[in-house]
Length: 220
Image (tube, rainbow, N blue to C red; front, side, top):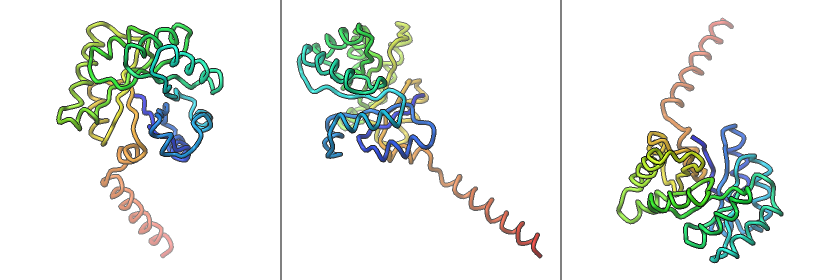
């Protein structure tokens, strides 16, 4: 599975990238607003740290506007930046045009397997189903991942990756791994929670204590 970081904080990207396992980064207007910085500069700095796909979202609602913004972003930003568009009829039109020009597109705000398949047919490089937001409505977001992965297998979809988004906790990641989702994007907090385990910490403490005893015995 590809591990993406969902953030617009450059320092967080640098920290997780230093682990050597960061495959890409997703951003959105809300995250950019939270950072308080210039959108293009933030994406440019992130793309310099992580050489995987960096999703930069358009804000236009019509296909022509999305295409115009997408082409401008590809022209102004590093080559590993891909364009993020919403799953609407206008978004599909833009996806078809941009992907036809060899530009990677991440179709976001996916809430059904039908939406996912239509985005794939339009040429999306990634589709982003939002697990946590479905959970917020009282339904199980993981059911959507299962439906999409079954659809991908049934129709042998191979050119579009399923990018699980709106991740809230490590269990979401585990379930996505077991269902075969290609990618997951998560906040820094979840990245760290995935790595942390009390038995790992306890094992390190025990090893260090034993080694201290060995050194003490050697000096005796």
